[in-house]
Image 1: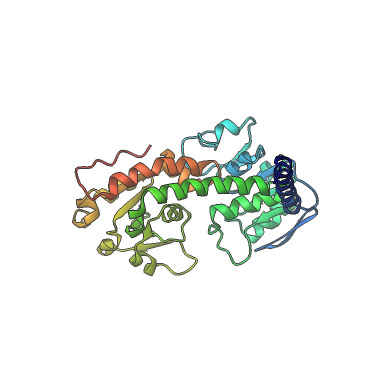
Image 2: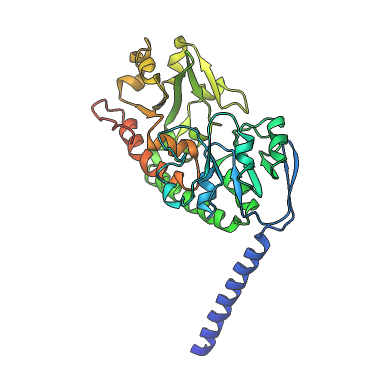
Length: 331
């Protein structure tokens, strides 16, 4: 075959590939008016939104990742006065309305949004109706728990609303590559179990595999102890146990989520010193204000790369079963 023929063949292949990419981009573009079915009914978005408000917990992150300045940010937890954590602050160049506590409909209305995102918000039907007087509202899908959407699903819904599906897909793929890299370099984790618990409102609380913060750990290769899954019914990410049932938490690695005053309560649990996790230094404490806890809890396109990078060394230190291996404080 002549060199010119080979070059022509290669050019044709590249052209076809470029056309395929172009066609894919065209077919994935959002068409407006966009109709979205959700748990409270149907929302129609007439055109590409330019001004987007969110009442979601951690909802500003994905908007910032996609080039949108959120008109509102709902304060969740942490010491960030703007309601935006360090991984997202470089993307923020405006001052959004900070929603604290209950929804302030007048505060939201004055931002004059084109659409309101409420897929991880816990809003009621009455809240939805009030918000709908301000702008079209995108709520969580039907038959999905208010806080049960995966991090991918939340990003994909927002990407659809603002016509950024390709960018969302690329960012999701990048995060998944990071996750797969961790799994590939830690094949032994697939045989290790985890439990995640806390002390809140006078009881020991346990998170099931359906909790979004637990999912990241299972995506990295760990698996939730079967005894934990047996405690929770489908659709519930949290349940409580008595202190006498503390042995159920004795997995290969035990994560403790410590809100205000919780660490002291956990450390005073009478049966904790009898746990293998305690004896072998397999516990990881995640404080409310730590970057790691915030990054895992937010579960966004911006926070997850930080969460992955930060949690891996902690798991490595805790899961070796050597009590002499010090698990560093979570940053």
